[in-house]
Length: 410
Image (cartoon, rainbow, N blue to C red):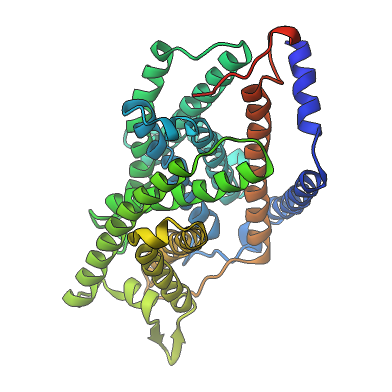
């Protein structure tokens, strides 16, 4: 194990100029994010643009988005293990590593939103279980992290021993991970859904919309990351696997847009007293002679991105061309990131319970802390990938060098 640890450290330190440049950029953003976070911890959340009127902002927006990215690993687990689809089975490990990365980022965004980490101690002392949805969210997130981390470490450990993994060990992990993946996004949706004083979230369609959008954005990110990984390393990702993921995105995009359209229709056609948040999102609200419309451009950009991406994914000729498919994946990420982020969190507080309208946009501190957390996630995935590839190739092993061979991770 000591020799293995030394070999692993050597592999992590070994790379070309692009690899070192990538680590340097990540290190810079992590340092800037850490400085901004310590500044926030010292001065309090007043250095953010969150206020009593809008008490959840950019941090919770990112948290919601990355819960979806984490849950999307199930899109690879089901065809890989349940249906034994070989092209997907060869890359399912990298999807599970992305789930580990995403859950860690979710936890970091929640910690950032607390203001001070010590506040988590109150949750441990007074959990109020099982009535507290926040406690349920803590359980499902940490449980999902443990499940995916167990799968990744077990597969890599067996590969490092020069052996295939045993399905007798993997089946319990697989069968737990599938419902657990849906649970992490469902419980997160219920956190908003259960707030009766916030009519924008208090709708039964919120949880299905969360699941549908998660199964769009997560796979879209995977498609882009897998292509980058196979260009800069020797990761074996087949075109067939990528095209199958793209096909699955097409179905989920259609479902996501349908649910979104149903929500828009319900609000605007009924013209109820609770349509103010949706009105603020799409057209802005007028109050005391001031037109509040800071989110309107973001909303329309997100809608255009989602519709354009759906059209591209729907047409096989465009979906099978990597250039147009990659454009569509980027559009999905932009569209869902806005829709499930600022487009979901902020309007829920508009207007507040006293009828006030507070135009929220993240401060520089929030942007720097968020950039640092994004960089931590990218660094985690880089390290996991940098560990998995030499094990897969037989260069990093727990067996003597003369007996090493390439062990498939599927």
